[in-house]
Image (cartoon, rainbow, N blue to C red; front, side, top):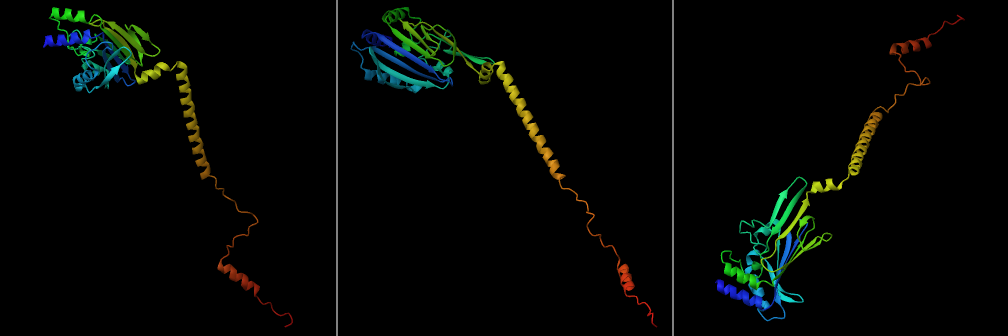
Length: 283
């Protein structure tokens, strides 16, 4: 099996220069969109592009990648596209790096603090897996020498796009303003990739961006609003008291007729006095 694999790789590489490119785009939610391009020189005859697409489609079935034909000005081959919902899931993809050994336990590590999460990306690219060659056996020096000689002209480009603040990196090309970091690698095995970035926690973002003057203004606004509500409540309570005591008691006018307090007996006596007959003086 090893001889067949070695022969296949020899034919693949001798048809022209081998080129692979890996591109990782970290999103704001820390998910990652990525794609792997693999190609051989257009000027050389070799494996058909259609066959390369079929092989990679079968190889990437467990990872649910979409595979299609790809080419640029110099190379032709395949493009495999995938996504993980969390960057830590890249640790499970062998085409990124071989994490089976104790020397390479993970591709991405996360450390949490009170203000931010620190992510460290550190790995050796698994170029053999990208071209479909499997792993170089460490216990077979002859096999390693042959593969190293064949892959001496190997070209591999790795790009990481990061929307967060990058603390440190060993990228060949850096563009901090765009958040793009690129490694141009010659030969295999590849050089180590290192990139460290931090993701501020939501509350920490507000606290870090807010100056002391901002906090003073916020405090004054809170005090003013509290006084406004207190005054409104006080005025509302005062109006309620006034409305209850606003009906005046009108005193009796001196011009009003007196109330008739006479008893029935007094009324009859008045009538009797008015009807008394005086004696006739002529009699």
